[in-house]
Image (cartoon, rainbow, N blue to C red; front, side, top):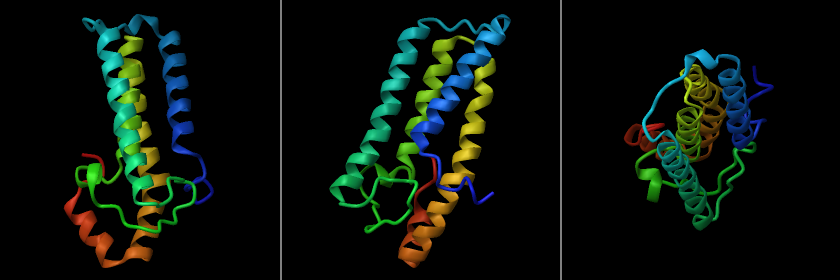
Length: 152
């Protein structure tokens, strides 16, 4: 489905997933998940996810390369900073924030959306980006991809 590849900005995907998670939690209140200090834990996770994603953006800006994932055309292969631990800190940050949102909702059903987010981002965002990076940077990207995991 090339129509969706790199077309929907990932922050919009996160927001749509969060909205769907909220709606599902409203529709299934009997699947309540009792997590002690759930609000505090949720805030910690959302903040951690935000700063994980932000660290990726800041690193890209320092490298003077694009942060627009809808147009995968990098001028520099960024392999330092947070990119030594994950190839996709911005998407990982979105996943961590969604997990925090799940904890906040205190409902088990929204957990279903976490793998949906990962599958969607892998297929429609990361795969096209990695094809573009392989085309642009060849062996350098292939070596980097072999050294650093996609998510964590």
